[in-house]
Image (cartoon, rainbow, N blue to C red):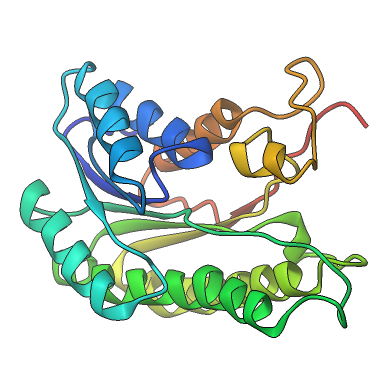
Length: 238
C-alpha cells in the first residue's frame, strides 16, 4: 500500500458531511488539504480541526456552479498548497418532487451544481495533474445514478451524468497515469440526508460519513499500477 503522507488534496463541499469526513481522514494520513464551500464560518471551523492533525489546511469560498468563481478559487487552492495530487468532487445538492411539480429553476440548479460544478472544478485541476503525469480524481455520484426512482428525476439525472462523465474521463486520462474513480454510495447519514428526511442517521444501521472516507483512503493507497474504477458502498442492514 502506498503512503499518502505529503500529498496535497482539494475537496469540494469539504466543510461538512462526506467532504469533512474525507478531509479528516486525509489529514490523519498526512495529506495537506484545501476544502471549498459556500459557508465561510463552517469552512473556518473545519480547517481549524484539520490543522490540529499537524497538516497544512486551507479553504476557499466559492459556488461550484459559477465557472468564474471556480477558476479563481481553484487557482487560490493550488497556490496555497503549492501543488495538487488529489481531487475529490464531492459538492452536490438534492431536491425531490414529481416531474411536473418540481420548479424548472430547482431542476436547473441541481444539474448546474452536480454536473457542471464537477466539470468546472475538474477542468481547472486536470491540467496540473497532466503536467506532472500523475494524480487521482474521485467523483461522488450515488446509487441514484444507477437506478432512477419516482420523484428523483432531477437528482438521478444529475448523478447518471456524473457517472458517464467520470467513466469517459477515466478512459481519457489513464495514459497520463491519472486514476479516476466513480463512487456510488447508498444512503449515508450526512447533514443533507438528515435534512431531507431520507434517514434517521441510526449509527447501528445507517452508513456514516467516516465509512465513506475509509473507502476513499483505501482506494488511494493502492499501488499506482492499480485503479479503483468504481465502488458502491452499501449498509449491511436492509
